[in-house]
Length: 299
Image (cartoon, rainbow, N blue to C red; front, side):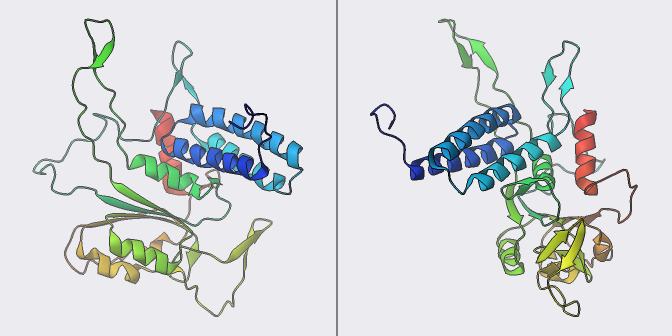
């Protein structure tokens, strides 16, 4: 501890501390620990203020932007729900024990198991923190099971002890890709895949995964020649080799109809869930993530 030794912390030391706070906040977001996130944001704000007063740094605007991003992210999370005793009820998009629909008659448990999911985000004007957008966050939560609390018993010493080991719950392995290039996307696709969530704008028969565009006054401005096709655009045909195994594709885009006639060339289970291309103006944002938000608020 530098302060206990009478030394003033260096600029480099404080910068590492701020980055640690930012990474810790991302971890808490992934674990859906929103109460802890709010505490960390308050502490981070105080650390940034102290940092700028000490060193009058040019990074003040950059760190203030970090605070704005995480504040917007928390605000976009579902509304606080109170029970009859005015106690906050924690709402989660995760799969609840006993909350899933029963299997249809004749279906065998364990025929198909979700092992890997690829979550891709590339929408402009999207609420995000670091490289985690709100739509990626919500679909991430929807692919996880809610942790089961340990059953406890009172020991002869009066302390609480676990009565038995908790049942092992397997969650799928998830890859979070924010604005990946096509080569990066194919690297992850070829390594492992089962579910693909694709969120991005329209482009020439596909969905953009990485865009070289600026948004000015709400309008998209192209940085490339209109006659040229976008290199980092995922077309349905790009996924044909990956339908050799069971595949579930979710396309949340204004060009989702590009995947409407997805061919099943190898006879393996294949599902394409497509968002509508037109919906009421009162609904703002991406359709699939709006549904997830409404679902969490209705529970």
